[in-house]
Image 1 (cartoon, rainbow, N blue to C red):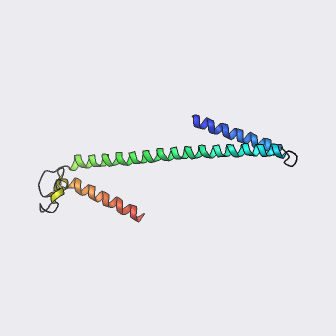
Image 2: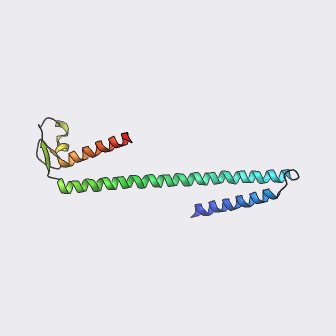
Image 3: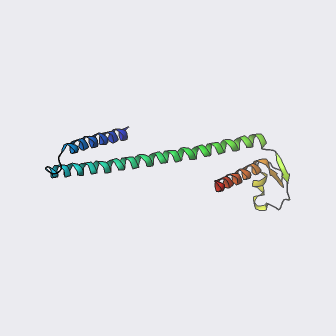
Length: 136
């Protein structure tokens, strides 16, 4: 609220200065006109600074909310898949294909040499997102 009050105050003061300046005849009262113009320029700069600060705050809020929504939706999606398909095995593979990461390929199923649905779903989602981002 403080930001809005300051912004409104600057706008009102700027409006009053412009009205006052429009009433002054520039040829006869050049010094007064120039002084008002300097005040107007200063207020315009303050107004620009306020607008920049406000837009950067809005951008941060939008970014944080968008990221948190993506994280929440991803976690919810993975939990749904995990609880519904946690023991589902898609295919049995030779045990040496994914040797250092075989635990990840078979997770959450504990059968050695298998690929779980959760792993397959996660990989296909990542590939789909990368493909869509590159196409669009």
